[in-house]
Image (cartoon, rainbow, N blue to C red):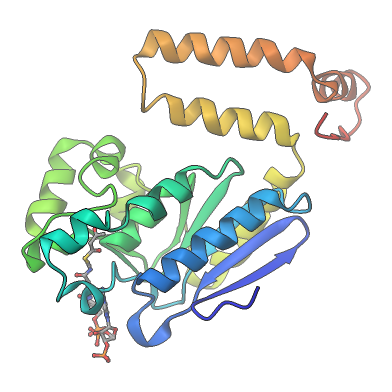
Length: 258
Ligand code: CAA
């Protein structure tokens, strides 16, 4: 399918989705969000794809939801139309791992999109923020919820109340991102991480994504039980036999997703 606001490339088992509205710093409008969800669903259904990367431009991962698109909408428009609801749900339904490669601005919906991915690798130029307060609204795709779980109440309140930006160093220190790399190395480092994931058993990869995400939904005891049962159930797979025999035989495992 031809997209107008994103670019999709599939190479070596990795689907690379590049947000591509350079004139609007990749602001998330209806078209971009629906193309993004469609591309993610295609990647989910494509057996060749084993890991997904979402990135933007050097200047902006995404500078937020499209303010020009939203400015004239009424409460009834956004409530009845459930603004951003179906798209956020669509992204959360993806079971394959998604890495966000963030350079430049990741603001508002941009920061929230990065947080909907499974982990974030950012360049040393990255700037994260939830500046919705400056527009007379609040975050609408997870900025008050995910950010609080990821970096704690005090920092999340600071970000959401003042609208200030967080640089890459602070983002790493706060646990928002997993790694900071020099801007020039961002895509190389992210694609290497994606390739590493692509080599694993897809069954185990999808299981671990589900288990880690569950830790945000359920009490610890329930989460631990879920993890243990999933761990135990993986002993029904051929990949568990292969992974453990390969270790004993001192060779690389050849996983077949079975
Ligand atoms: N929506 C629509 N257009 C945007 C945009 C956005 N979120 N962010 C940037 N743009 C547009 C600008 O309007 C400008 O377009 P024109 O040239 O046609 O005027 C172009 O992108 C370049 O932007 P700037 O000239 O502003 O670039 P800058 O380098 O001076 O500033 C910036 C960069 C600090 C990121 C600034 O653009 C900015 O503050 N953007 C808005 C950030 C924001 O408030 N995001 C939250 C949106 S609300 C939201 O996301 C709700 C939610 O939770 C779901």
